[in-house]
Image 1 (cartoon, rainbow, N blue to C red):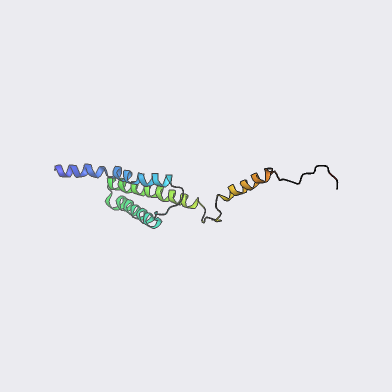
Image 2: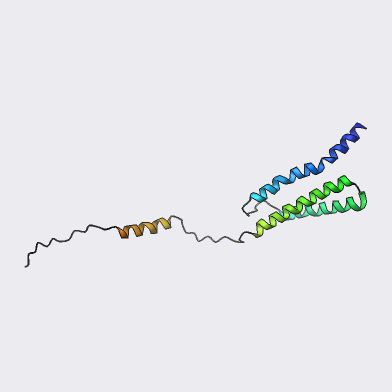
Length: 132
């Protein structure tokens, strides 16, 4: 009897635990600059599909509120993560143009302009007003 009550109480924590598990991924996606190197759309889409199937299974077959709630929380956060990742991935350019120009070249051009503006003392032959 006690173990059954404990199990029911623990099962009530599943949506809270699921929320705590999804939040770090959402924060990481929100902070990312749009380059999703380690994100798998296939895996998250598969998890979304399984969450949707679980919601329908809970609604039409089990009719268990806690199961439906846990499955709905997973479905909701999967949709948020996939949407945020798609927004980040599509918001960045598809390719980067690398002109392979060193950033120090700009300094060289400024130095050339500075040298041109400086006067140089060139020694010329002295004219002592002697006419030959």
